[in-house]
Image 1: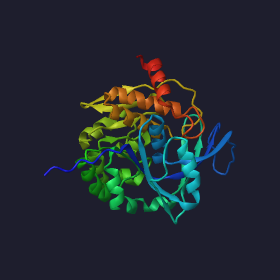
Image 2: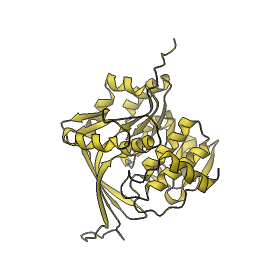
Image 3: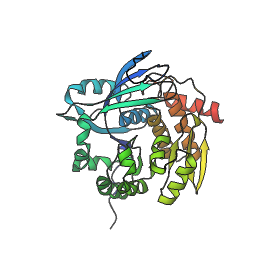
Image 4: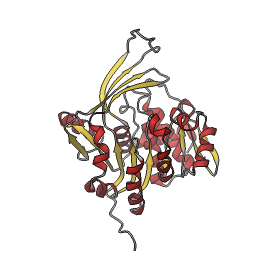
Length: 315
């Protein structure tokens, strides 16, 4: 019996952990234990991979539904800020716990995070609700910006695939999730898997793209994509590596670059682009994100994405 195909109200549903970000950047070096160093810049901003990717997709003129949990005290702030990207906060459920908090500390080359989960602790419960599942299947694509646990993935993915949704996963730096053999099923079931080098090293014992290629092939990953920082990115295509270099930019803050990358790749998938063009769009979004303080201000609109693409890779 055919599964009824729902109307696709959204291009993308983005699901994941929601945070209030406190971003300190412009450090010349990392402090030694017990040492104090001073930041050149500070910004308080909406954060978490789900927010960053949703805002990036919305700026590229996609219809986006953001789903997650926040503290009630922060709702007005979220509503106002998201509205600036053409996003509604209606998909964010208020919770008695406070909004999660992340402190991001960045140099021009790298960054580290300190995190309080807050309301995100109840995200699995939220995704088990029938109303949320009914909303997910009205999207063309569902992106999970979270360490999606295996038992939940096994309940969600068959439903999404029957409804004709494509899926992607970026778990962030979640070593316990990445080491757990139970989550290999999720990596195989998702259509696009987006680790960075540090995450790939936890999976494979080596941060090289070649090691990730071998691991992806052995695990029968559908579409493995590894983010390589300043070197760009690579995708596994027919057992080989397809590499793409990013555009040159003057980077000031790495916060959110990987999330913007995810958005650029997903945008290409929705356009029916080749894997190479998806990688190029992703690298542009990730690179341009680093040119401003915080994860959101550097996100490109469609016009800037197109002009940067033509300047970097040709028409």
